[in-house]
Length: 291
Image (tube, one colour):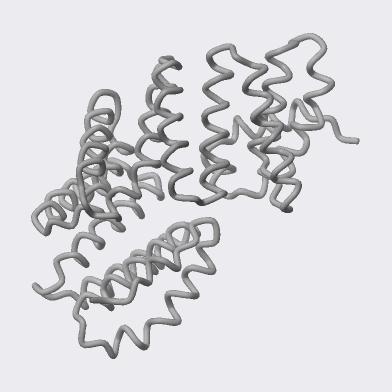
């Protein structure tokens, strides 16, 4: 057994997570448990990748591979997963696919259901169309039937990912059903941040279905909750603005403008959004009103 260092993950703060993991390196290097050091290094690399430190992440993964032996099958799976993630995050998705596929195969051989679900979930992201749907369904089936808590914890993400696939196809009713399942899974987990994200997605599907007033009520409740605990969310402001425009295209612009301004202010510092969604940011900037 190795310490459950994965419990220290904070995906919103990868820099802090990297520091927490690096603080364990001396202990891991001294451990007689073969899996500890290489697994820990793969997660340091993941934290680096989430900070767009792709070259550093690749070097850390090379160090992880050097620490592996035939007695580290799970570390090998995690190495494959993180190599794939670094490639995808650096916009080399096609190159990432073989790593995720091999991670799936090796995780199944090792009966490591949590990592097998992770690999299938990543295949669902990098594949497209029916192949993406098939991988998402494969991941969901394994997570639902597995007795491994690490596998079942993926259900919220998996329902969410498949929901966005259907949303992108214009099948908003199917998306709404899946977003509702994702919300139920998040509520069972009890993470307030994840619950709010799931509620935001559910409301987004309501807007697509034309249920704008229902969507707006949910987003406004999320705005109040975020303001109450000092965690304002730019995406909530953006959706409130879009709901106001959808409800009243002629007169809604004035009411929407301050929310577009707040959304732009909060999201323009997100390096991933700046890189991957420049059109979205430009729309916010164009529709905001600077007081």
